[in-house]
Structure formats: structure tokens, C-alpha cells
Length: 455
Image (cartoon, rainbow, N blue to C red; front, side, top):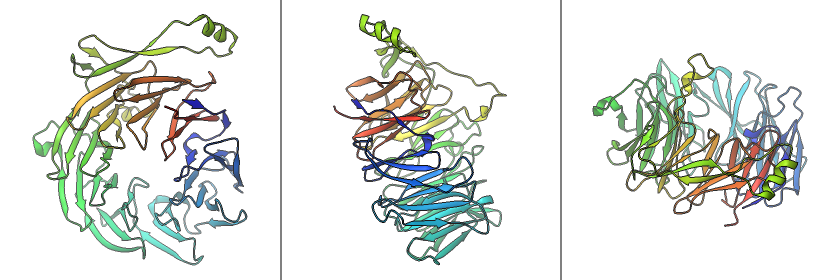
């Protein structure tokens, strides 16, 4: 593992690799900087945005073909599109004169920009090819989780509500006309997601209602899943996270009840319910526990000279039976206490062989499940709460961070490895993989570094 130097950035959620992996975009005040992902010292372009209100840049998004990049300032009701490799002076400015823009994103053809208006008044479609070409779609809701594109970009599924009922609208992205409208039996549709194979759409209800609707593009409801219908215990709480397997054959639903239900694509019934319990039985899985270790003489000398000492740790296999997972109970009057529960992270590996999950009430633990057997493969316990985790887009490597100057990487059959970030002042709070899988950005307050996979 090799690390780049530290570079300035001022908004970690807006650091983006281009889809082709060539560039990384970062925000510094009112400037958007494109750096070479292989050599961050090399700056490709700098865009100066004429936004007058801080925070200046509130959105950054690459077009799917990597030829354009979008910036937005919702405070000033303005969206700009910039050319990456074309004319440096070319710019497209988008302003909605009727209602303030609250979200901007790309269509899959990279030639249309979608904007959500305040109060969910409408979804606007702006063309980069013709200045006067605008389309409007009424009654959108739950932006942006309520919008999903077909894998080939030909159709868009949009959550809508009118006449006191929730619907899924299917739109043709060539004409932006409604092709089909699907009525769904939900109280307040919270989100939807198209399957990777493009055959099905999964939509889930608000947090207080565990209802998941699976429909195909033809508008046929394949299943309305409620745990209570299958004689399961239902505590009245709904879905917090959702993930399709890469092949679209499995749908993992992470609930507020600390359980992940995995539905199959044939019957749309659970083939497994993965419970996250504070105790793990003997031989159930490998349990990796992070522990502090003593320093060598050289490390102690470096720590004495450093303004911020580094704590050295390693992972040991927990041989105790049963192993215990630390549980954190939030205060009821704490901010967002109602959201510190349930499965906050659910994601399949690139090959679909593994499933990683996190339970909000056990923030020091990562759970990794083997999909073929639906059994627990490993549990990783860290000293600090896990702040970010994500699978490599090309292999079964799980990277995670704990707001410390350490990058953690778990691989099946290789266990858990720790890599010290060169600067001990870095507190890694977010990770972003390069789409080519060869590197990932490590984000800390005010700075970022790129880690390159050399193994």
C-alpha cells in the first residue's frame, strides 16, 4: 500500500473520482479542482464558481461518460455544468425561475441534467444540446432515493404521490414521457431501486412500516413483502438500508430491528434472516478484535517527536466462546437518537459472494456474511466506531476507517490488515474508491490522500 501526499479539500462528501478513473474532483471554497488520480500533484483544471453565498459549492457530480462535471449552489439557486476535456471557457448555467433547486443530478445519457424543486413541486429535465429544451415532471417525492435509472439508461423510475396515493412512474429517457404508472400499497414511499439486471424495481415504505413492493417494468406487482405476512416477529419498524446483489437475484433488506432479510428472485420470500446479536457462538465465524500493542524503540522515538502521537494496534482472533460484541445505547434526548438503530449499511461485494453489514447500535463491529451459505464469515471489532466502509468495485476487499490515521482492509483468506497513513494528524472519516479499483481516496477534515493498491 502506497499513499500520496496530503492535499487540501473543504467538503469531504463532494470528493469524487471520475467514472473512467482518470481524475479526482475536490472542492476548495468557490473553486472546483480536478487532479490526476494517478499523480495528484498534476492539476488538470480549476473551475471558479461565481457563487456568492457560503457554502459556495454544495453539489459535485460527474456525468456518466466523464466528459462533464456538475456543480451546484442551492443557496443561490444555481447549477453549472463544466467541460472536462473540451473548451475551458464552455459552461452551461441552469437556474429555475419558478422554484428553488434543492437537488441536481445527471441522466444516464450525460446530456440531460435533472433538478428537484423545493417542496417537491416538480422534477425538471434540462438538455445540454438545446437551450430551450426543458421538460417537467409533476409530483416527485423522496429525492434522490426516490429516483433510479434502468441499468442501460433507457428508463427512469420515479417515486410520485398524487391523489393521496403513492406511485412509481416509469419514464422513457428519450422523450421523458410517462410509459407506465404503478400504484404501490405504501403509507409514505421512502425509496426505490432498480435491480442490476433491469428486470425488477424494489420500493420500500417509511421507517414506521415494514413494507417492500417488488414490481417488474411491465407494471406487474410480483410481491408485497411484510414480515408479519410470513409469521415473523414484526416490531412495527421498517427498512433502513437496501441492496441488490450484482446479478439481481437477491435483495437484502436491512431493518430497524437489527435483522437483514434476504429475498430471492423466484418467490420474493426470505431465504435467510441474518440477526445481529451481541454474542457470537463458538466456531460460528472468525472474530477479529483490534488491540493496542507496545511500540518499538524507533516508533517510540518518532512518537516523542510528533505533535500528535500515533497509537499502534493489530488484529487478534478472539478465541473466547461466545464472543461478545460491544453494544452502544443512545440517549433518548440525544440528536437523531431515533436513527441510531437498525442496519445502517448493507452492501454486496463486487462478485456477490459476500455481504457486509453494520448495525447502528454496535458501531464498533463489521459483519461479513458468506452468501452461498448465508452464514457469518467474519466479524471485525475495532477500538473506535467505524465511520466509513465500502467494498472494492473489482474484488472482495472491504476498506473501512475509524476516524484515526489508519486504513483498514479486510480480504477473505487474508484476514484484516492495517495501514498507517503517513500523517498522524489525519482522522479518516470517509473513503471513496476509484472505479478502476486501483486506489481509494482517504478523506479527513480539510485534507485528503490517495491510497494505491500495490498488493
